[in-house]
Image (cartoon, rainbow, N blue to C red):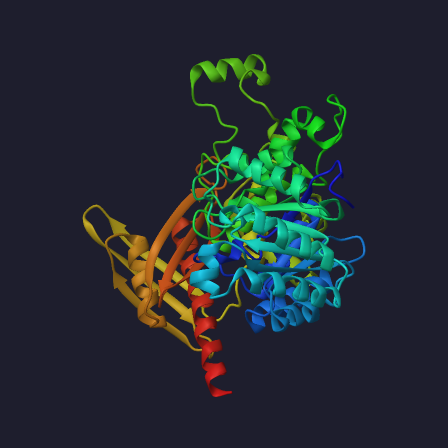
Length: 529
């Protein structure tokens, strides 16, 4: 593949850069769940992690390589600094993948060289070709990134890229590491590389950018117009600081406006062929999955996947949409997999119908997970007469995509009112199998529940975010609760869904505490080795 390709490569870094969002830490099983969803979405490359960063990251990349990196699956990529130790770790972790890539990087801006790396330009010109060549001993597919390229001297940047490609880099990535550039500036950087790097036709130009000024997606689209053919992005735009360019926004911009972008990719202006390999109908479900597992809530007015993205409140808008949807909608909600709230199952539905509908919705569960989800479905169906696709999704997310159940909620009971003190009684099963109960008074029922849980668990923490929303409309709607709590400057998320929002609140809190407790226990194990 060359830079003349007429299709845009989607490089997803949700599991690497996205996971660097505060509080978005994922365990190995959660990363594997997201990787499977990304493969189904149709991303071309999954940057699965930074193998040398920790044993957990190494294991996650290795398992994703084994499970998702099949011959027909996406390329699995591992990040590595331009050092032999990093590159070797990436090479070892990626071994099981049929298609694998090592992504190595070294800063090229003077500010990074002087203050972070303590290296000279001459050092960089020596290190880059040596490390790219070393990465080639593990795989033919090597990507090189000059970190902080957006603030690097262009002439020096051209030199570095020429040497990287000569040493075997098949992709060169141009990061706007600090989200500083504007679209016209970023487009000019890409054009300058196309015009001034003699061997650039031997590599694909990729772009990676942060959203500090809210310009990441606009920058990428301008880069496409100037020759970039790979976009490095994340689901929901998560990532460090203000996040990364959002995959769903880039893909749908290229989809809806493909006739505008066609000429820049050498296509006929009227071609209706898609510009990416993404199955757009998987976008909404993947967005929800990442939001639930990371605890990072999608804002209602977020483009493409926000709750209000296809909602119309204005009477003028509503009237126009009723007459013709094209009056105020430039894309169909179903194009991203946002289906109507269709009633599909009830309490008399059998296990086979349940399994069949989950498969239709794209869930592939093991026999054990299916059994757990079915029991939960029956429990919800006894309380809620009509079960929708969205309810089923919430059930699966709540029952299956949870951390190991170290503390288990056995009972929660509250008493509250406008003339009484909110009181909660809870019973928990502890990791050693004991059942402990306690009660507490709070400012409200949820506060009382959390205080009672803390009295039993006795792990200091600070609740920093609490969100509750309904899955569907109606008095019997399931409520989804997402929380984030802090312990020793680290953030842990929890998620749960239930027809009773107090129960959902308790379960979400236990979910976050289980993540916290697992981290504490793993640190204890490390100190005893």
